[in-house]
Amino acid sequence: MAPFPEEVDVFTIPHSRMKQLVHKYCDMLSSVNFSSDFDLEMLLQNLCNTFAEFKAHEQIENELIMKRLKHKLKALQITNTAVCNCHSDNRLTEMIEFFKSGLEKVTSNPADRINYGKQLRETLEEFTEQFLPHMKEEEEVFQPLLIKYFPYEELKIIKEAVIQKHIEK
Ligand code: FEO
Image (cartoon, rainbow, N blue to C red; front, top):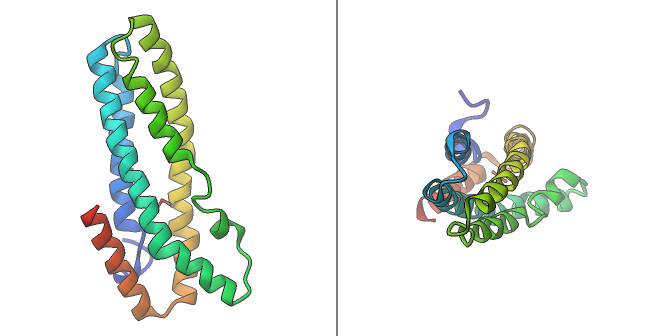
């Protein structure tokens, strides 16, 4: 059970979907044969769709949660660098560009695919090592800040809007 009442928990439900997506690409990565053009194309198509979802998730968080939280902390003259720097890099866009560059290599020779696959594996492992703790920080650090600084009724409305936006995306 989530440590916060479900009606004000803005992260757990969207993150369960994001973790499901991580699990899926890790599974695909564990069995992919990079010398196969079919395998590489299937994996990259999945990754393009997955990272588009990650990006939409990040945009929803920025718009509905982080902007409000930053504003609230600023009004209270509280400095929190984790909140300020959340989503500050452009990693998701770079990853999508990297996957697209891989799709252009699908029809090249097996050695090129294997070489790209090696880079893809390393890049994805590095991304995942940051992304999972990032979500944990949102759940364990940012959610308590929201509970502390926002009225309960306002958080309920934010939570509903967050879920609705994820459904619409
Ligand atoms: Fe919930 Fe910023 O990923």
